[in-house]
Image (tube, rainbow, N blue to C red; front, side, top):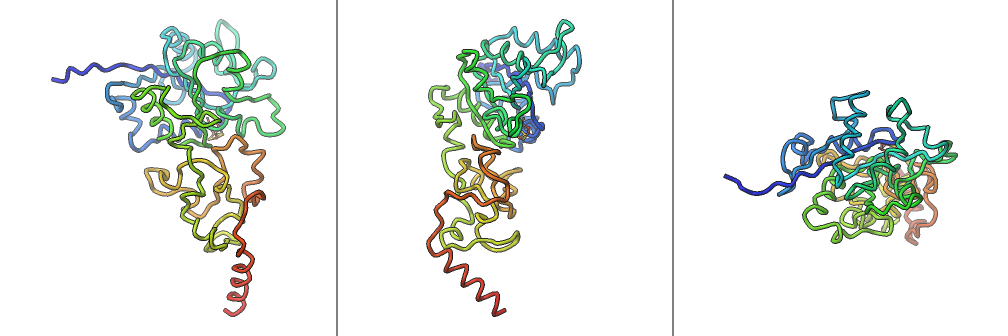
Length: 302
Ligand code: FSX
């Protein structure tokens, strides 16, 4: 008989302004599957208990709001927030239900739930940095979770897991690291992203890196070569997509011929330029011109 003591970790997941991509991505986790996450102790010694989650819980309406209120009484939970938080007009632009006949806003829920959490995880780029929800002209005054906590002097530790959407491993792996090794041992970068997942540029391990170094650039989709001139943000984006890959390691954006959109960056989307617009501040190899001339000559001679 296994006498090992299992510690239950309560998790509350609330949602702000988003496309639900972050949650869709994370609950489509392959290894572990969401079934494993919910029903088994995937982290030795710990059982994750999602006590509130808008997308996988069966309750809705009044019952769901009551569960949220009761969940908060537990204290010491991990609070996951995905989506940005509109701060203008007392957050009225993102309501999740009603409490005592009044609209319950994501802003109010964040302020009520964050102080008693052991940890706040901002899941996705909207929650981490404002992302698409706060893109110009940002009519709702959308802000990141970090900005809201700072503005209200809430000192609960915060970890950002950006990505539009984020990879499921980045979320469950980070929770595992924290529970098994301690939050103090989780190395974060300047943007509170775990370095184990966001420590290297896409560019460092990109399968097209040799093309870049050689100065061979694709001019249109389907061409052989680096996707830099087609708007790839890999040279300035930190994430481990090239080695981790997506959908159970099936493939990833660049592997399927699409440029990296730079979605894990704090500058995404406004300051990175259009998806298919070439970034300008990257030093390209000196022989780029030479190689392009060679391609032109080869094409002419075909
Ligand atoms: Fe944003 Fe997430 Fe992109 Fe969508 O919760 S990071 S728009 S994948 O859903 O918030």
